[in-house]
Amino acid sequence: MSDHPRIPIAGVIGSPIAHSRSPALFRHWFQQYGVRGHYVPLDVAPDDLETVLRTLPKAGFVGVNVTIPHKIRALEIADVISDRAALIGAANTLIFRQDGKIHADNTDGYGFISNLKQYAPGWNASSGSAAVFGAGGAARAIVASLLETGAPEIRISNRTRARADALRAEFGARIVVYDWVQAGNMIEGATTIVNTTSLGMTGKQEFRVPLDALTPGATCCDLVYTPLKTKFLTEAEDAGCTIVDGLGMLLHQAVPGFERWFGHRPEVTDGLREAVLNA
Image (cartoon, rainbow, N blue to C red):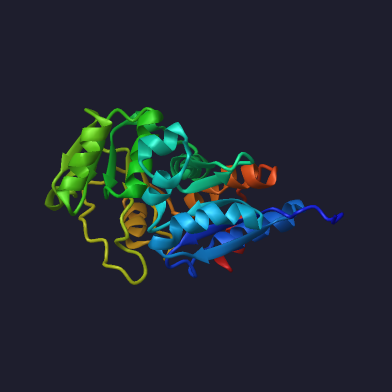
């Protein structure tokens, strides 16, 4: 019998996954806190996801983060689902329990709100309407968290309107849907504006929604973090808004998983941001 305790392993599953900043993020925390553990990127094809998830615990894995394109399928595979993950309809954090069951959670909304609280300390969801560009998985997490924190109204616009309508059907009367050609109109008077789309990301289409109606003092957040300051954020800053980049959400959403898997609650610091940006 070995005298060496098994070192816990976690990772991030996606396809593709080589671009992920999460390994650098976890590596920084391992070093900072002297925690023993490993965190590895795993490129898994959709058809292999369930086989891999059922096998990983036998190899010493205590859990994984899940990213595109597996978040919805991971929820379907899980044996136990948190209320947050059920409401959002997707999972980004899986815990492999000792009884063999897979527990699914979604910490994207937690990461989003924590990012705003850290980098826009005066922000208050209840101060006015929110406007959200996009209606995909990330938007679902953002909408759920904004409703929970008191946003009186959430205006949503998506290039495919049916997806925005589906969000309204699920989340209720506080959701107001705008056609994509009117997306610029929905930001008038809004105090929280969020881009959850890939528009403006390096290698993707530009963000071209007119922002003339931005209210000075509003808080604008872009979930895109490559580049760190997108065209959307640059224009918002020029209009007198408080801007929050998307990297902080990535960092904060990882906190609950690290705590569950490795037994230490980490902090999101400027040093962590620097380490991840330089990875």
